[in-house]
Image (cartoon, rainbow, N blue to C red; front, side):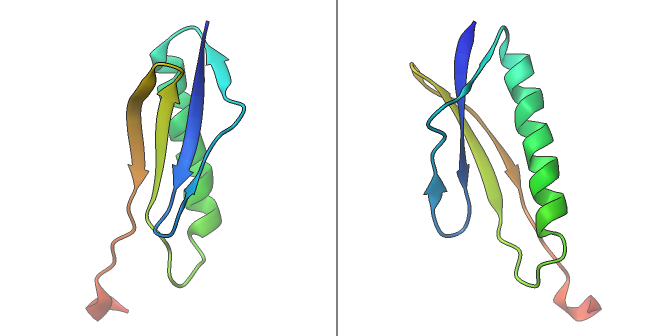
Length: 78
């Protein structure tokens, strides 16, 4: 088992994961990151100024991957 840490970064700062979660495979960590991004998308959907959000996944050995959520709107269509 490998412990993965899911640090969350928005437009303003980084929120480090101090605990992490153990998974058998990187694919499981990728699914966890996607699930977390989906929850963040639901939470942020109603906000006027939605920040872009990224989950930076690392292990004790270092950076593994990043998953990102970008909000882009056509201002003319409001």
